[in-house]
Length: 412
Image (tube, rainbow, N blue to C red; front, top):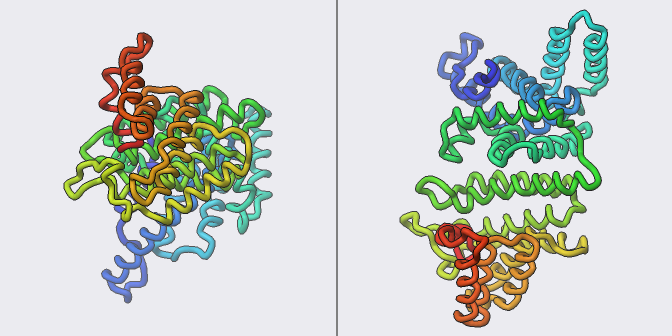
């Protein structure tokens, strides 16, 4: 069940005007309150992830950290419309959340000595913070730890996506449900279960290292690309694309690339999303119908996103070593992006790249895309051999999925 603070912050824009100087008149008070609410909403989207990350470092629990952050948001909704937005809203929110955390620890104290020690330790940790720099203190490690926690493999894919959009994207359960065309109660249950699972599994708030870091990073990249792909090729509803989800995934990917600049696959997934996002405006026709890659007006491709994607791919390649699946797919997307017209596409290189992808991450979708590339490079007969082998593979149930995979194919 959601707390009262959660329900209050999700209904932020429904809060009415605050009490002010009677001489200003009701219309002016209402306008000021509306402007304050808009400012609070914008500030929350910017600061919420860092605020939750900073609190999670102290309390060690993502659910408690989010509740504390939302309590601070409720306080802002109550005070800022009347008193004005503070000069350092992030520090104000952190300071308010700090006091709420101390109160929470005190309420939970019992006669047991261990509980008292925990309360004192947390209180000392909170009091030692410089509120003017609270948001900036170890923000990189905090955000990275929060990303790893929200995307922990102990959670299902759906739970990881919902929790990531909630605590890192600052989206409400209603916004997430609307984006994925599922009931609000479904998203709320996923988030609640995710927090409970993390607590029961005693997942620690930290940046993993060694072999665990590799596996955990793969889970993070999977979540980010799942969010992007749902926006790029929607799996439900009448809309072919949902740009808002693509934008959120890009934002998360760019943040991650800043936090772990030495990880080639992070830059690879960012490159892939940037280049694919450059086509969004050309993928849908006037009536909402899909436009295949070969038929798209390339003048409508976003050249800025292409340049950013190519730069991210170059960073991944400069780091050395064999490219991973995301970077390889970004290299394929780059082949399309560099061709000003479809006939200039370097299909031989794309075939080689798909061969490499198939070795690392084999799937029916990869094989279908590889068949398209082989057909363009070497003729339809060679492509049909791949498709026939895919359809008749005894260990595969790919045949019935082939029509559906076109939504994710590079030719779409």
